[in-house]
Image 1 (tube, one colour):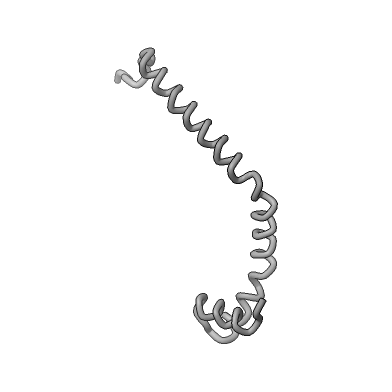
Image 2: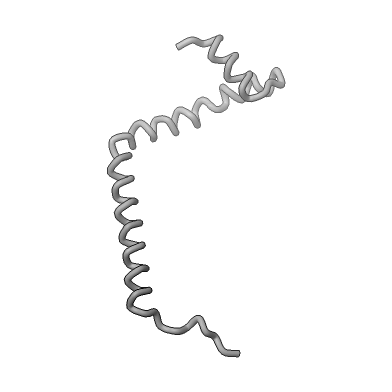
Length: 80
C-alpha cells in the first residue's frame, strides 16, 4: 500500500500554516494580557467556590431542593 500523506508541503502550504500559528499565538498572548489583571480575583473565586460548595450542598440534600431553589433560599436567609 502506498501512503500519499508523506509528501512534502509546498511553500504556500507552509506559509499558510505559519501564518495561522502566528495569529493563534498573537491571540493567546492578547487574551493573557487582557485577563492578567484579574488572575488574583479569579483565584479567590475558585477558593471561595470550593470552600462554600458544602454549604450549598447541605440544604439541597437535607430538603431535597433543586439547585436553583437552594441557591435562592440561601441568598434570602443570609443577605450580604
